[in-house]
Image 1 (cartoon, rainbow, N blue to C red):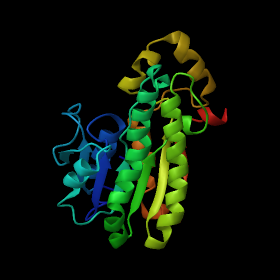
Image 2 (image 1 turned 90 degrees about the vertical axis):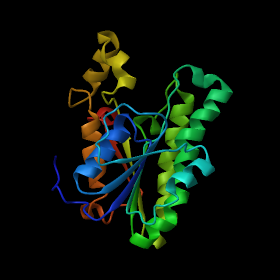
Image 3 (image 1 turned 180 degrees about the horizontal axis):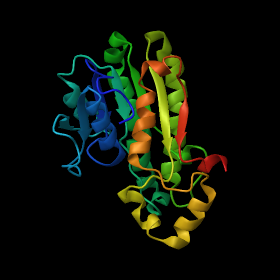
Image 4 (image 1 turned 45 degrees about the vertical axis):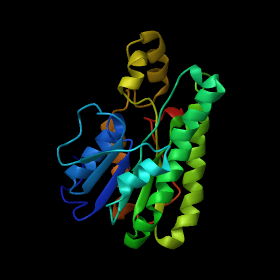
Length: 239
């Protein structure tokens, strides 16, 4: 762990989309750094969340579901938006496209709106999850690319709107992270080779890489940062 163990002691954190993948790793990092963490998600998750994390069922596409999950949370210092889906190929179907936007973009806005007053009372911060596809398109994933581009612009817009409330709003933009979603690419040398050849750091990223960068955006060291879209991609986008 890069940070001191009590960094977020006394703070309350909410992570939407945290029952598996990068969201679960972020929730675990927050808990390990002393925060009281609530993880929102659907289903049973992948079993990787620490026992200290409070897990609640919530669907970010439903205001009623989200409000129920937040009902007895009186204060918040940190909010992470990690809920997201990708449906390669199928996203050219308009109904699938709309579903991806409903989760990835509208769901992010819904969580931000639902937690704003709690964060205002504490001078808290929000970290959204963008993507390297926030910056360029993907032929198989028009919904995902559009939604993540939207998350980047939403982050900048809310950074302006929420600044008078004392709330900072930033985003992380992961690229080529080794997760189950990218396993097929990792296992295919013909496809993985060009990715690694273009990546200056010469390796896949890990969920830990993303989480460590994300933690920084919540620390006092980032107190004068808002509206930032922080790439965590080993330099892929600049090569």
